[in-house]
Image 1 (cartoon, rainbow, N blue to C red):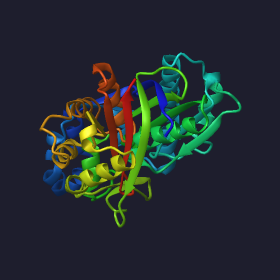
Image 2: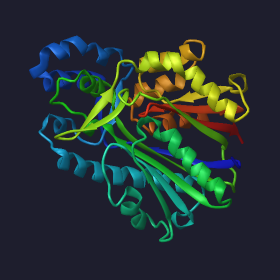
Image 3: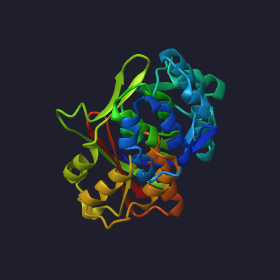
Length: 348
C-alpha cells in the first residue's frame, strides 16, 4: 500500500449511560420470566470488566416492547446524530472543511439505512455533491479495522484524495430480550453504543501513517459471531467458543497478515486490539505470549464504554495516540465470518 496519512481520529458517544450495577438490576427485571437463565449467567455482569456504557436510549426504553420498525427508527435517529458529531470532529481536526472530502466509507451493522447514513447526513454537513460513497454492512466488530483499511486503500489508489471513514453502532437496541438464548443475556452485560471517524489521505501530516493491511477468514465458522434476522429484530450470535478460538488461532492469523507485509511479530512494538470482552483480551495476550496486563488501554476502554462493536478499537487507538504511538503498531479486530482484520500503523 502507498503510505497513507491518518490525518485525524475522533469519537462520539450517545447522550444516555448506564452503570454496570444498574444494567445488572435491569437484566434481572427483563429476564424475570427466565429466572434460571438469569441466575446461571448473571455473574457475567460482575466479570465483564465494565463499569459503565453509553446508550442511545434511556433505560426505561429497554423495558418496552419494540418491533423491528421501532428499533430501526431509533437506529436511524441515533446513528445520524452520532455520524454527524464524529465526522464533523474528524474533519475539523484534519484542518479541512466538509466540502474538501472526496469520499466516505461508512461502516454500520446494527441497523438498516437506505439511503445510507452518509447520504442522509452529508448534505446537512456540507459534504460535496460529487462525494464518492462506500457504505459497508456486515463487518460487525471487525468493521473499525476493515473500514479504516478500506478508506486507506481508496486514498492510496487515488493520491491526493481525502477520505472520511465513519463507523456507528447501536448495539444496545439490537439485543433480543424475549428469548432463552444465553447470548442475549451476555450481550446485555457487554454491549454499548458509540461512533468513531477518521480522515485519511496521501497528502498532509498526521500522527500516524497507514502502511499496510490484511485479513484472514476461517472456513466453517459462520456460527461464531454475527446477527440473526428474526421477529421482532436482530438476535445476537455470540458463541462461548470465541475466547478459546482466539487463543488457538490468533497467532497464526497475525503471522500470516504480517508475512504478507514482509514483517514478523518481532517487528511490532504494540498491538492495538478490539476489546470484545475481558476474556477475549486475556485470550489475545495468551495467544501472542504478551505479558498479562499488556493490553491496558483495551481494558480501560472496555471498562469505560463496554463493547461498542466496530468503533471500539478506534477508541483504544485514540488513547494510544494521546499516550504516544510507538514506532510500529498493529490494529486487530475479530468479526463475523469469522475473520481477523489487521492494519499497520507507523509513527509519523
